[in-house]
Amino acid sequence: MTSGFDTNLPSVRQVQSIIKAQKRVELKLLTGEVLSGILRWQDPNCIAIMDDTNQQTLVWRQSIAYLKAFD
View 1 (tube, one colour):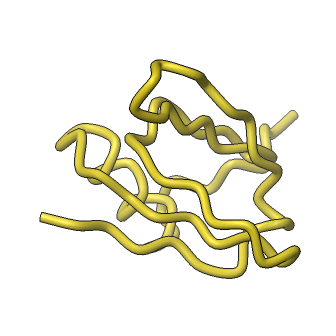
View 2 (cartoon, one colour):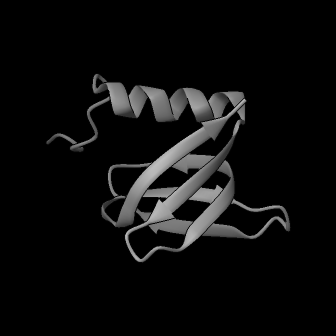
View 3 (spheres, helix red, strand yellow):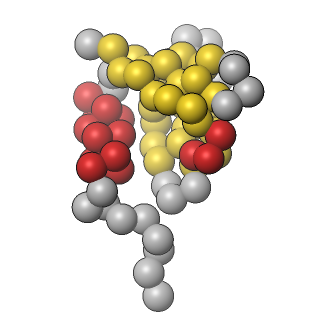
């Protein structure tokens, strides 16, 4: 049985490199809400982001409009 998490996809690899580098990101949701912080982990369904107050938010992938990383 496969997990459905294809690590060969460029988007998955790019998000993983952002997690490893601990770059700050901005996630804009389809609702218009913007979250900013550092990505902690990803799985096939969700991405976890930690904000400046160390509050972790779990975001469903299908709710993301875009992800922007900052250097």
